[in-house]
Length: 203
Image (cartoon, rainbow, N blue to C red):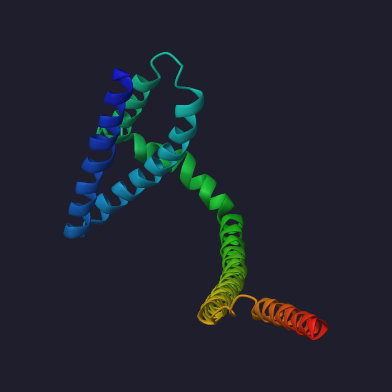
């Protein structure tokens, strides 16, 4: 853990910030020799950073792995060893010169394909977004109409309930009272008829 922290600090300070400052001075002074020197360093450092991404995963268990990284960065920067210039002139420049045409073709194809893929996925994304917006709008409108419909039905039931409660109930069975009064009158008539018949019989 300590070795990892020290190696990260060395790479950050001496492998990145220190060369960045001297690259700034080379650009400012317009010294071609220094400019070329630091350009070679940045090319080698870019390759080192790319390789480091994979070696940190698969070779971190190797003894003295982080110490070797620190020594390699120091070797690249040292004005005595001139490691970055040596690696660039011996390996990188000849390899890139022989493969430059293929690399340029691959980069152009990748650029065209990435542009086509970006346009394709952009169109698909716009279609999906438009479809989602239309569906959301239709669902929202349907929910709104359903809500309004439920409110209107509720209002109708309320009105019906109020109208039914406002109508007064009919008086309790008037026909029954009529029937009872007619029965009483009939009984009175029959009683008076029987009394008149009894009086006539006495005469």
